[in-house]
Length: 219
Image 1 (cartoon, one colour):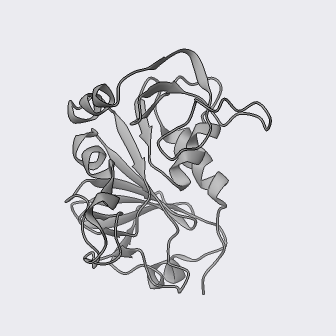
Image 2 (cartoon, one colour; image 1 turned 120 degrees about the vertical axis):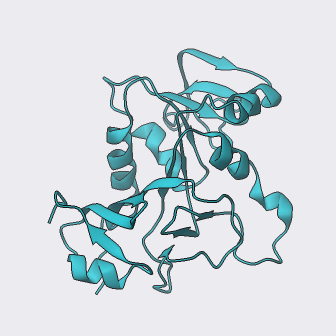
Image 3 (spheres, helix red, strand yellow; image 1 turned 45 degrees about the vertical axis):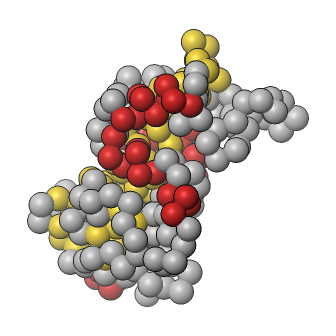
């Protein structure tokens, strides 16, 4: 039996609360962009966008949008004091140079060894759709994933081996879904926390690979 679990904004708040002070963080298109609205006011987290922004803030109030200030997903954003604009090439130099502490990406599938598939659902999809995810997955110091635990049809997104074309090999270290927070370890998926309305047994049935439970998992 499945559970609705955490909302997307609740997922974003959970991830935001775990980002350490002072990290430079890139937010992938989709669910991860909600993290910008959830960074605690008392924590300095410097958000980066590959279209050339550093110091990105939350979404603007309705009616206060700046048409020239957008993130990589073409959503209106704000800029914190001290933020900067720069060339697209400089932005990717930051990524490829290993200067991004964390990238949070969406995913179609994550394998138990950390392989990531997040750009295509068949080998026939056009190659340009991969966008900047390939650079981010390879260049960021850490990659976390935010995604629903299953597809709309109930198929697991956390699997033993990805079926879809890969974005990067063995890069994912943490996954936050609507049902659980899971670390990717040398032993595979390890459950750190879960939504109160789902049992560990049901969670395992919704996961397409072995799921170990940490000793401190919230039950």
